Length: 357
Ligand code: ATP
Image (cartoon, rainbow, N blue to C red; front, side, top):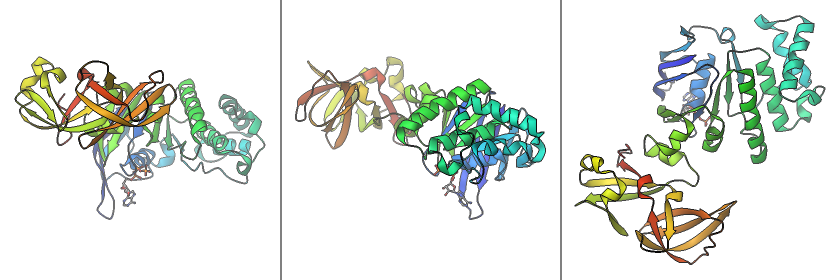
């Protein structure tokens, strides 16, 4: 449905915001563009909407290039983080507005019927006569999305739509957005820097950094099979544990332990790992206290309770690690424990961040 091909953007000041970006989005999918601030997410969205011109490359909708098409002719609904509702209009008037002007202009009766249909779908009927100034952030966001949907766009673009909402409301509205776009069957691109938000609602995630796509994949693959060290560190909360290690004589050495390399990697892989320096990545749920022998001992210096789990904080050598255990495991600060790895769950990266295992 949407193809982004070798898309590049160099701004007037010479800054290269996008370096040859490629991806495709299937019809009806909800796709998140995810990445840290400044990675180029909004630049991509603005080029898809036609508000920015690419330096080179192409954008196609259903096989047809749209880069020369005016924004108003691209059949896109765009919702920004600041909602941009008309303050002097009621909810109903705001929702109906796109149907009273331009190429989508309808008769008054038709416009009213369409507005009412979508207000029902988004559960904002009771806000009908209120003005934006009297609505909460979540309500304003629902109105803005409804106003985008009445135009029956082919593509819905949402740029950080939940960033002005408090944490609890974000959870609620993101579920509503997923339900809604699936119900309407509209192809949707959702920009966020919040990995949890992206993991929870997307059919697919495109994770960016510094103008380059790092991984374009199913949400669970970003967690289970990260393409590189950046992805492994960006996805997951608490963040993955990282240790610089050296492989020598069949052993993996770190300041505080030495273990045979073949515990971490399958036999077939050993030849791909010449001696040298690597980065070991292991998620907090894969470093656990054990009763018997383990890889290393450590003193727990902090315990955080997060709902059903406890996060244990400790140092090994000069690095800080985290381990997640169940709430029933009543470990206290100061406990001296032996830890072991779930070796087969570990990732191994080259020093440049390329994943090799
Ligand atoms: P955020 O999450 O903070 O909105 P983003 O990933 O959406 O970030 P973009 O807004 O796409 O990032 O910006 C990408 C990069 O391009 C940033 O480094 C930004 O400073 C730069 N940039 C954006 N617009 C311009 C411009 N008109 N001229 C020069 N540089 C720009």
